[in-house]
Amino acid sequence: AAQKAMNIAPGLRRRFAAEHYSFCPPEIWSRQREKALSEIKLDTDFEGVGFDIDPTAVELARVNARLAGVEKRCHFEMADVKNFAPFTDQIVLANPPYGERLGDLDAAAKLAHQLGEALDAHPTSGAYIITADADFEKHFGKKARKRRKLYNGM
Image 1 (cartoon, rainbow, N blue to C red):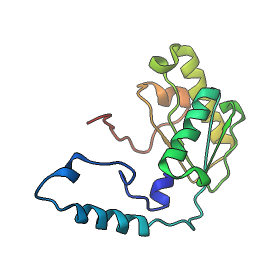
Image 2 (cartoon, helix red, strand yellow):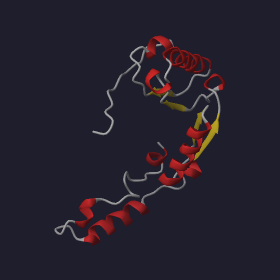
Image 3 (spheres, rainbow, N blue to C red):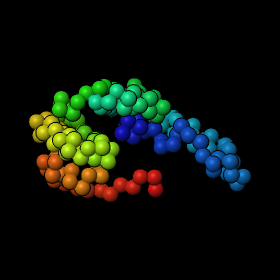
């Protein structure tokens, strides 16, 4: 989300095998990379806030934000979802652990319920939840307005 808000092109910080294709001059890649760099918006008002109860996950998020070039626009802290209180104008993106990741289906259901209660108590501009839990809506306490199927690694 931070990269999108800052107009940072996907893949800008990585190299591609196609850069070595004989029919594609290296200066084309250089020119396009320079163009993409010049279009980055440093003055965006985006502010990302992330939290997790696991300190290792929080540190990993900080490292990934630094590697993505968005660390100045993101703040991460250790916190429990039951203390989650987003602001009215915020958009919430969440990927809560579910049974497979958490290892405990009851704990995952409780976490989804707590997230639903927090969002009921603190309405936001929108909430987008990524989950593989088929029963998430039941635990969360409300139906999704729209569902999208995501594919990982395809």
